[in-house]
Length: 465
Ligand SMILES: Cc1cc2nc3c(=O)[nH]c(=O)nc-3n(C[C@H](O)[C@H](O)[C@H](O)COP(=O)(O)OP(=O)(O)OC[C@H]3O[C@@H](n4cnc5c(N)ncnc54)[C@H](O)[C@@H]3O)c2cc1C
Image 1 (cartoon, protein in one colour):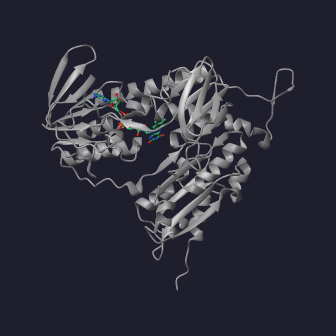
Image 2 (cartoon, helix red, strand yellow):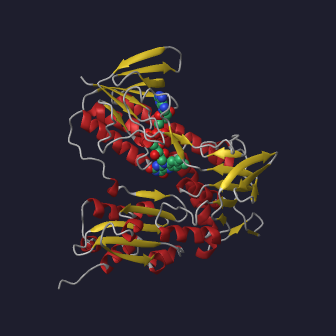
Image 3 (cartoon, helix red, strand yellow):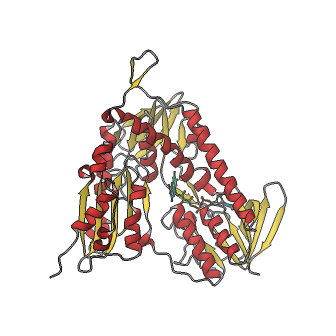
């Protein structure tokens, strides 16, 4: 029986453990901070649970347009809906803990051994574990999968104190609603939290070092989001690079490199992530790291050391839970001799959970503009969609890309409430190389937002010559 040792119990680790055990391997997962990893305990699951509350708040803010108003017990108009943040945070943490426990039960059911402790490679075929309850254990391995994730990047000039200067892992300990939140960083994490806190009724300033928010996303989509956020009252500061964050009592001050300052009651730092690859014995085992410390892997998750695979955020390959899980599964399929196709990032569907959401799959507008592929594209505003009108949705669009000539769908962008769900038909079209006509021919419900996906595809139709 092949012995597989997996270091890290996040999606990169636990999903690969399930595959390896299904294929008959003897599998041990070593994890230090809790099964589910950052994805379940501090990042993905908690933030999306917080965002579920913020979505409800955003819907309530739009209620008057749909004819709903609020009254107090005396029948007077009530104009404020307030959030009980400690209660929200308790729910967030409970849900994360429950999910972590679910993963533990699943692994146990599938015969995976779990060790709680910190692991380190001793060469490519041996793993030393410092157990959390004391003692050491040595594991011999035919294959090792490194899936140790990443941690929030912090700077010496902006040290989180866990009370008012916060990383995204610390916000769920907030005992009171911030009166003014300054979010530094306008990538996906910064934008999601800024959008969520704004919907929760908090005064938010977003400090962005770039010309616009979400520099890595579709520019049209980012512009819609920025317009909506500003319309709802967020202050977005462009070309504003943070130099330092300091705290004086209840006030935090963000100082920018040009000398300007921004004050708030709290500051959330969203400055990206650094890989958890130090002190793991990787280099000594023959594993090559890049200059940022990320593990270099090929498309079947092999590192430069024979028998050592890596998956997830520690590789820096599109840092998403779904990608981490797929990299891990691919590693195990490859090592254990199952059918395997190399990782194809061109098919990854991803979503920014702002309000509205931004979902993308396949080729990007930037790649098209750079001439990577000759495509035709169509952008359809959601405002014309009947369901959108009924629901009071005014912002957003569906954008589709298809290959010139064949009409095969190669990508798309959806900006809408629940865009994460609406992108799925486009994702299937990209994965299955469907043409725009095929996408257009499938029935959609009337009235529905997905009708706009089919309508966009219909507009890409060419009559045969
Ligand atoms: C705020 C935020 C929101 C996000 N939201 C989403 C989202 O909505 N959708 C999405 O797809 N992605 C999301 N992501 C990204 C996602 O969380 C990561 O891509 C994912 O966690 C990567 O999984 P992983 O298995 O590589 O690492 P992790 O989830 O970080 O797990 C790594 C595990 O390894 C353990 N570990 C580390 N070192 C050792 C060691 N030496 N020995 C033993 N164990 C060790 C850690 O304790 C941890 O449990 C979000 C990220 C952030 C920051």
